[in-house]
Image (spheres, one colour):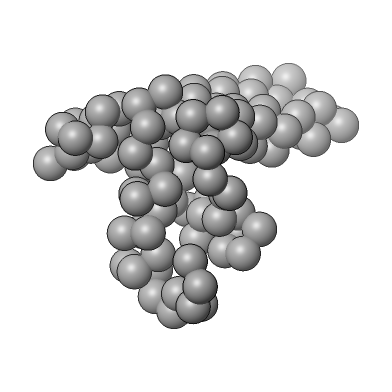
Length: 107
């Protein structure tokens, strides 16, 4: 990724190319799912300082996927909001069956 991406549509295409590995997608999905679980638990139980765990858990799983399975650098640092939005978008696309953990089966 040499030039700056200027549209979200273009970014999401790039995002998907950086998330082809099945194990990495599973780790991203798991991290995002746990973000929702922790957020719900903290809203119900008034999480206080434990809210700091939400990004650690979410990004921890995702970054493991990049480091050990994708072998690439997360786009989070260059495109933080689009990257976060894309994590949620991929999560819901998997739930809705539009995409798969196996990128070769994406519809």
